[in-house]
Length: 86
Image (cartoon, rainbow, N blue to C red; front, side, top):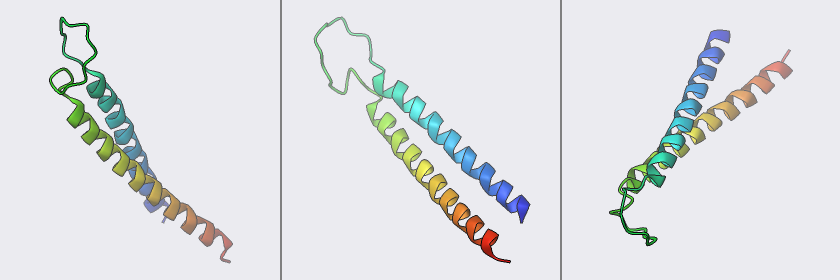
């Protein structure tokens, strides 16, 4: 029983680490701009080519974080109920 909890905890932590890495990677991709000689502020797709993958990474990271938080809340709820039983 204890090994199962440790395995679930490790899986939750891995999901959170991957989600954080995806958020960091998406921040880099979202802000990456191709070097242009023009000084005008433009937000067209050609000057920011990696915005679509960045938003995809944010979506996957959000799903992973949601999965980890639901798993943790279920495990915490079960842990609280098992402590009250004699």
